[in-house]
Image 1 (spheres, rainbow, N blue to C red):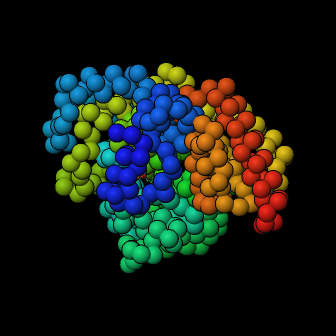
Image 2: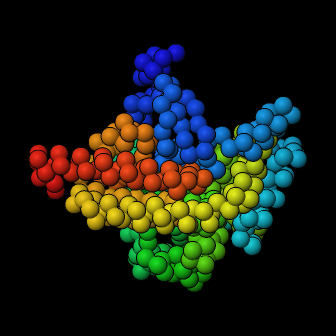
Image 3: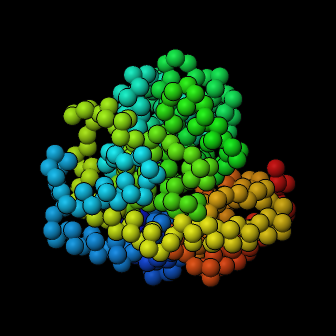
Length: 403
Ligand SMILES: *Cc1c(COP(=O)(O)O)cnc(C)c1O
């Protein structure tokens, strides 16, 4: 198939729910991907933050191959060696006390399980979430997601969700009632535009939750596994959540979701209370097990911290140089660059020059590169942006005034 055939078929047969870039990707390695014509790109999208260990990491590939030849499917009602190995690994890398996992296949499922678990274990119904939050798009997770454009066509959603301003722990305290089961929070808002909360926010939430005896759920689907410079982003605050949602990067690119909880909380789930046919299948478990090994062996959280600082400093220089850049912010290799206008032209211009970047809202560029990206590759990305932003700025100055 050539480029046009691939595009035509997807346009014709795939549900039209994604904002498509004009790009057919057929191969990947580390922080690089290639299109169908053989052109190389540095991938700062990382499949939406999935590719922490890089595309097709040899250890993940080998683990998948080995498991595919041994056993692909094994329902959770039977025991399996690969699954048990993974469960032990997750318990080991999770903070003390967070020992028990429900295994699923995606971020939204990890959140669904957390919502159900919070309700079941507390006997209460309300969940406090935040303005700007993104927790997924199935009906339960969507009820915790903030953005009106995702929500309004599907109302009525699940009742009992309240949204308060992100970073405002005082508002959380005011909103808690006798019926509140949990607070659900992203340590850094990803889809919401790489928003970092005030320094003490998570600590204050932890204190409030302790005081009011409600659960603190951290959605680490985007921030987890080293992305922000620590294995889990909540570690920056030195707190311990009661439930953690993981997905995106946990299995080296293979679909996977995990809801990790304290033993006594997960005990509320009895046989039949929740399940997933594919959850914990050996193929995905083998991939996750290998990906976790790679994250630890290659010290990827530390690498994200060092390279993330370097990347952000270089982007800050561009901010100083161009008036159309409003702000650069982030932690580790989770970085946002906010502009004074729509960034789609910058995304397209970067693609032309061999760099794939993600957006977060209409005016924010989002960088979620594989943590194995090199300093030299970051240099190339910044140099490309320097050119593209420069062109865009002069076009704006010539044309309509920037807002
Ligand atoms: C991506 C994301 C989800 C949803 O994950 P899916 O695998 O797309 O269902 C949930 N929460 C956060 C914080 C995310 O970034």
